[in-house]
Every structure is written in C-alpha cells, then in structure tokens.
Image (cartoon, rainbow, N blue to C red; front, side):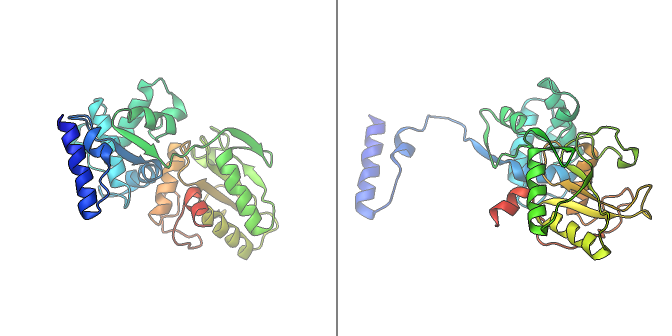
Length: 283
C-alpha cells in the first residue's frame, strides 16, 4: 500500500510541475540495497602505471573514484589494508591486486598487479560494474614479430599515418630474449622498431606518430646503452604489460625518458598523451 501511495504522489508531482520522476525510483528500489558503483578500467590502468612511479601519493586526475572502488573491494577481501584505500594505485595496491590475481589461480604475467578485464570484473561483483573495459586481445604475428591484436592495430594505424611499413626487431612476449631490454618485452605492448635507412628527422617523426596513436616511444641511441639505434615503444594501457614496461609507461606520463636514469623525456612532444582508446575516440 505504501508503494502505491508513493507512486501516486510521484504521478501527481509530474502532472503538477512537469517533473520526470522515474517510477522505478519510487516503487522498485529494494529497501537497504547498496548502491552499485562504476569503475572506469581505462582510468584504473592509467593510475596503475603512473602512481607506482610517483614520489608522492598524489591521485592521477580522473582516476581517483574508480581506484577507490577497486581498493575498497580489495580491502573487503582482506588483500589491502584500509590505510591504503585512498584512490592512489601505488605499490601497495599493485601488490594487493597481484595477490588477489594469484587467489584466482593466475600466475606469471597474469598476476603482475596490472588489472585485467576478467579479474577486475570478478573483484567488483556486487560492488561495481566495469566500463571502458580494455583487452590486450589474442597473440598474433605481424611483420614476423609476436604481439597482441591491440598492439597490432596501433602499429597498423601508425603505418597508415606515416605512409610506410615499419620493421620490427623485437616484439612482445619475449622473456629474456634480449638481456638489454631489462624485461620490458616479457609481456605485451612492447616493440623495438628498426630505424635502418632513416634520417634523424625521420626517426623523430616515427616516434612522434607512434606517440600520437598511444605508444610511449623513444629513439634509443648507442650512447644510452648497449644497443644500436632503434625506436623503443610501449603501448600505454595494455593490461599485459610486464612490470618493466609498466614502469616505462608511467615514466612517460610523468615526463621521463623510460631509462633507469629517469632523465627528462628526450622524445618528441605530443599533447595530450593519449592511449589507443583515447586516440580512437578523438579521430
């Protein structure tokens, strides 16, 4: 009877002042039901790359509310202490998320602390829903190099913009393949691109276009390490990033060069720094 009266009152208000009052809000909301939040996976991934590389506990703009819901869920499952439920996806949250992934039976790359679409959804059951889900896709071979379908799509678009094919000297999912890579190619989203026959200007332009479509990309020189000239690229926001690649992505966002010395970024400036998904939305 109470619900009938409320519905009638809502209808009367609509007729009296023209307000659109949803009947479901008045008649179908279960008593005491908890509100379901929304987690933006793109925002969570961005925070998971940037926040562990910060010198402070600042919150990545646009990521705080989503990260907070993830941390609350980790806390509820006893993977994260309440002290660290703060919207900052720092090393404690990375470790907690990795422990949660292991509890699901994941190992290796799948338990790196970098949220994947399935683990993020399962963590949020009854607490939040996931929007802007990001998947690395399946593993494929392109230009004789192993990568995932998300990385391939990014590379294909960069080649279209450049009007040229790019040679790949090292792909992804190559653990221990090149010692000088420091593990950055152990997971997905990592490419080394040949600059053979390119002028210095062309090398810089290739790196710029790679950045435009969502890579953190740098022209590497022999003066920087034990390697030849090449372009090193990391796909921002790839859920399959290795820890080393994730750190390079975070450093790129923070204005560093992606090397161990964390010197200022020496690559071509692009603004804003976008992921593949953000690039596509802004075409």
